[in-house]
Image 1 (cartoon, one colour):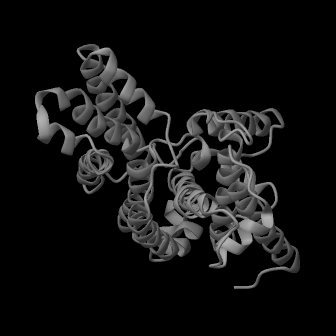
Image 2: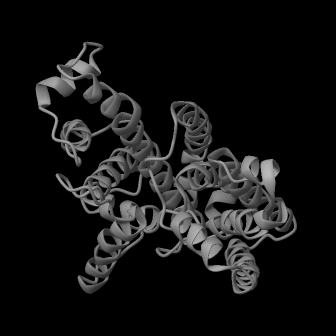
Image 3: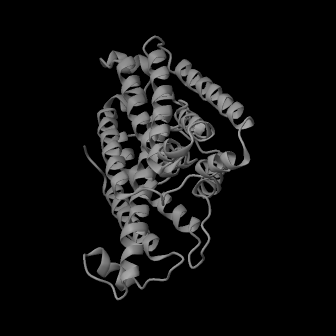
Length: 343
């Protein structure tokens, strides 16, 4: 594949920006740590204060890595969904994956009172939330996949996914209505999203899931490029539409489902990043767009997380609120400019 010099320069710029915002994300926080001490710690040395090593290696670095995985995974998912459904408003959670995760968490939190004592404590730990979220996403995925195998029209799959999301949201609303204030508060805190609660063990699992999703998305690149010219043309090229649809849905579900399980529902990154990337990479070639949105999603997520942690303050804003405040104006701006959002 031939990449023009302008695109090469864009990729170099994105890599440099990613490096800068990564270091900034680790540097800024409620505790001021000199840049040289951060670099010493990251390269295996011992900083002047032992507490700085703990802050960097056990909190800020895992959070930054989680931000990169989250941003890149959601951005890739959004790109594939928008191309598959030829809909500029399609995102990684359009198939009801986020709603399925919310349903799993709702059953766990609102039903935890039924499992008192030790059992309730085991269920309500951080891994309990991850498992419940992943299980809820998986159930919705199975339902969507079973429909995908029987329905040929991609727009019908999109609508069915939205309906699954509506049903799960309705069940969550019913569960919330009969819950107490403490349970509601815990569920709301989860819905805010968080990048700072993922351990190194969790990062390993999240990295494996994201790498698998990325590999599957690479296999989808050629079929997605063919789909840009229409389903009839893609079929004339020998492409299996149903197989491609299934592969894209599995890749998206793996990425969005695992990210939601560990970080909670993160809004607008998957929707806004592909559109924002196309403003600089004026191409529809997915061989270029896929690595571009990976870098752009990582950068935007790191910036949002840096803003959310309110540098030099002890307060931390919900990451979901920041991504919405950043992502929504981007989409509105593109619409106001009357630019073609897709293709």
